[in-house]
Length: 407
Image (cartoon, rainbow, N blue to C red; front, side):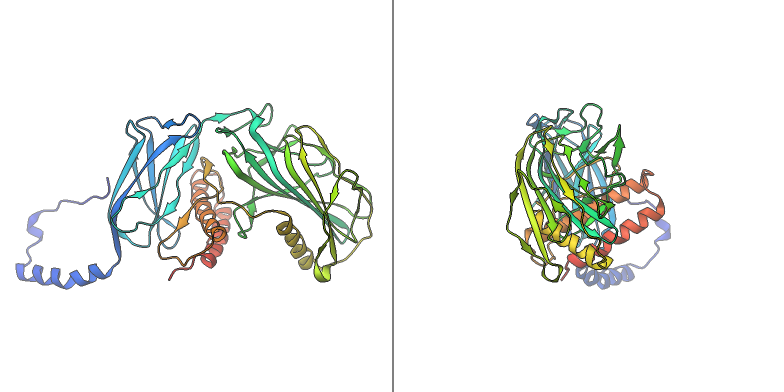
C-alpha cells in the first residue's frame, strides 16, 4: 500500500464553502512549486545461475532515500510468475532516489539506485544467484604488496582484488567459512579494511575472522570481476631478515611488489623487475612482478635486514597510500551482493540533479549510499553498538557530501 488516510466525522468540517475554495486556490501554487514526481518502478528478478525468473511470490522491497541520505520510505510487493514486479509512486519528492532489493538464500541482492525521471517507468531489475562451496572459480586477480620502514617497524600493506568467474555466490570451502586470505606466519596482528570504491577509502572489515589459524572473509563472494577488494596492514620488526612467503589458496593473475630503494633488500629471484618509480623527495620505488601463479603454489618473499629510519607518521602514511594507488588498477563499479545485516557496499547512484561525473566518481557515490543502507541494517539487527554506528555513519555521510554535487 502506497499510502493511507483516516476517516473522520463529517460534522467537524463545518467550514463555509467559500473558505474552502479560497484555501484551495491559495494552496495550489504552493503545491505546484514543490517539486514532486509521479511514476512507476518496474523490473524483473532473474536467477543468474539458472538463467530463469526468480520464484513467483518472492518478496521485493523498494527503498526510497531522501537528499540527506536517510531511508525515507519502504514499500513491498511480490513477483509474478514471470519474475516481474511493479511499484506505483504518486507525488514523491523529486530529490528522492530509489533502490529495489530482495532476499534469496539468506543473502540480500540489490538493484541500481536511480531517481525518477518523467513519466516513463523506471526499470530497477536485479539478479540473484545460487550459492556454492566449490572454490574452482575463485581467483585473486591482483595482489599488490608494499613495504615501508617506519621507525622501529616495517609496515607491510597487501591489497587484494578477488574475482569470482562462476555464476554462483561462493560461500565456503572445506573448513573455511568464506574467502581465505593467505598471510605469512609472521603476520600476527593484521588489520583488515574493505575497499568501498575509487578514491573513497577503506572501512574496517569486521567480517574477517581467524578460523583454524587461517584468516577468512565471511562475506560471500558474488560472481564477476572485482568482487572483493581487501587491504591488509601489519607491522614487523625492522633491521632483521623477513620472510613473507606463503602458500596461495587460489590462483593469482598478477602479484606486484613495491619496496623503497633504501628499504629491505628483496631476494628477487624469479621475479620480473619493473621500471623504477620516482617518489619525489621520498626517493625511488623498486617494483617487481609475477604472473599466473597456480593454486597451492608458494609465493616466495624473502628480505634481508634494513637500517632503521625515522620518517614522520604522516609522511609515511601518505607514502603507503601512494604506493597502493600506484600498484592497484582502478576499481570497477560493483553490482551489490550483501549478506543480511552486514556492512558492505555498492551500486549505481545517479540523481538527475547531480552534476556529470566520470564512471569512477559515480561508482564512489554508489558505494557510499549502499554503505549507509547496510550500516542501518547492521545497527537495527544488533550487529553494531550505537557508538560504532554513529561514528561510521558520520564518516560515510561526510565523504558522500563531498562527492555528491547537487545543483
